[in-house]
Structures are given as C-alpha cells and as structure tokens.
Length: 163
Ligand SMILES: [Zn+2]
Image 1 (cartoon, protein in one colour):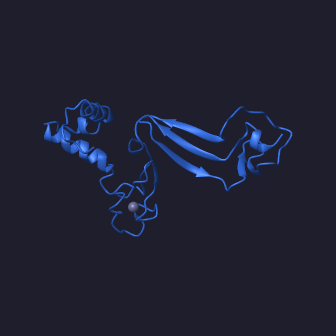
Image 2: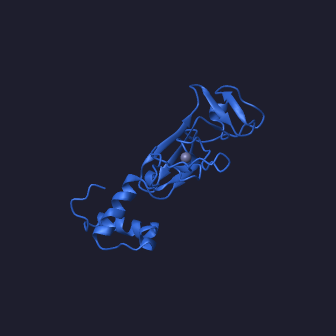
Image 3: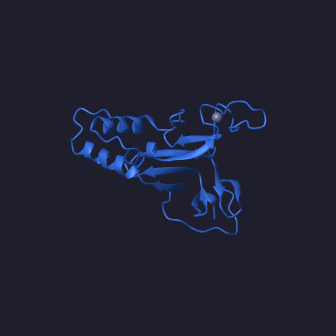
C-alpha cells in the first residue's frame, strides 16, 4: 500500500519524441512523488485508501510528441519585454523581439526564438530550400514541405549536410 507501488504516484515526467530523443520535464525530490488522487506530493511510503497496485512501472509519466524536440514549441512570454508586447498606451515602439505580440516560441530543446521566430535548424532548412530554388512563402511556411525536404536529406539528397 505504499505510494512507491501505486499506479497514481509519479516521480518524474518526460517527453519522448518521434526521432527517439527524450527530454525530462521535471522530477520530484528524492523519496517524494506526485499523487494524482490527492493532487499533492507525498513521500514514497505514505500510502492512502486510493492505492492501486502497478507492475514494474518506473513512475515516470511519458508524453509522446511527433518529430524532434526542435520541431515542437509552445508560446511563452517574450523575454525582452516580459510579455508586455505592444505599448499602445505609452506610444512606444513595439518590442522588436516579439514584434509586439508579447509572446515568442519556446522550443522543446530549450531554444527561445529570436525575432525571426524560426529555430536555427528550420532556418537552415529554409536556406537550403531557397538554394534549391524553392522561394515561395507558402512552401517556406509549410512545415510539411520542410519536413519532406528533411526526409530527402535523410535519403542523402542533401550531401554533406550538417542538419
Ligand atoms: Zn517582446
């Protein structure tokens, strides 16, 4: 009946990506874990009436995402303007980093977008697309197209690539 044997108790969270890489998203202090029933942290030997036995689970909650870490991002407050964005009231110019939106992309691999918004790998892919004569913005902004090019690289079409 200990938490450390319970299916509701987790000590860490991680994300596994389509390219096989893993990123840990947080871990409790040694000996402690998150109980999803009590909605609080408990010590490993606490145990409560909601105990549910589990077999050989390492108590790490897994989230799966497609692609690589750099292909996943979520919006967060711009680090330059602290999420304020456009200063309509004070008539100051909009923040140049987030273009006044107040939010920028936080990539799963830890990269925070600069004012171009794109991950360096995405920039490199777009550069290569342009080198191959693909310049229309629809293609450049279409992740499917970019990923298709990425797969071509895997097939050796982009020889000597550093992606
Ligand atoms: Zn900003």
